[in-house]
Structure formats: C-alpha cells, structure tokens
Image (cartoon, rainbow, N blue to C red):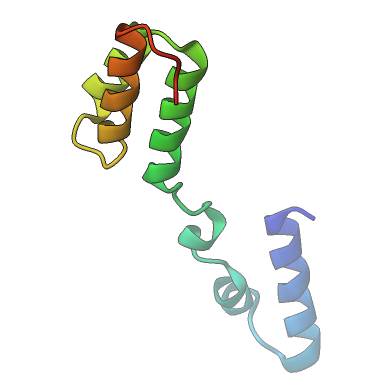
Length: 93
C-alpha cells in the first residue's frame, strides 16, 4: 500500500474513532525519513569483494589496482603477498 494512502486511511480511522483532526492524525502517523532508508553497507565487505575480484583476475595489474585503492586496509598485506607470488610465477596459495 502506498504510504500516503495508508496515512490517509489511518487518519480517517482516527477521526471516526476519537474525533482527532485529520492534520493531527496525519502528523502522528508520518514515519521518520531515516526509517525509510536502508542501512549503509559495511565497507569491509566491499573491500573483500574487490580483493576477490583481483584474485579472480589473477594479474599483477588487478592487485596493483586493489592496492592503490586500499593500500592501508588490513587485507592489503595478503594482497601484496599474493601479488608477489604471481609476479614470481608461483601459483596462488
């Protein structure tokens, strides 16, 4: 149901039940904006997904891009080790 329609129905029910003005009923039933927005995404999940993408690509250039964007992240040490192994011609651990 649409939010405005739901609020109007609630306001009408409030009027019929207790004699509350429509404006008052509408104001009380209006949700706060922050409740309508999704919670922000955890940034660590996005960083992990980017490292996974670099692993799938399996190239030093992909790891270089990851490290240029997230060089100070906790996963950067693992990315550096994996990049060094790829550059040395060793299989990815």
